[in-house]
Image (tube, rainbow, N blue to C red):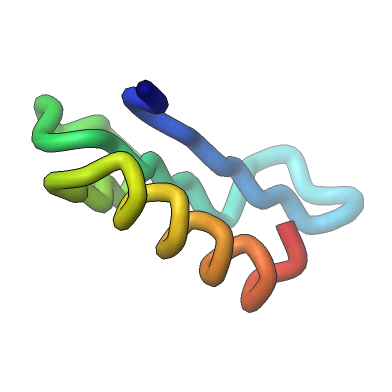
Length: 58
C-alpha cells in the first residue's frame, strides 16, 4: 500500500518553497511547515492526490 506522498512547490528563482503538502494513509504526527492530509483508505488518498496534482499542475 501507499503510505505517504509528499509534494513541494517552488516558484522559479525562489529559494524557499511556497507549498509543502503530505498526503498520508491514516494519521501521522504534525510536520512543521507542511499541510498534512490524512485518509482512511489508499483509494481515497490516491484519488484526492491525483485530483490535487491536476489542479495544481503537479
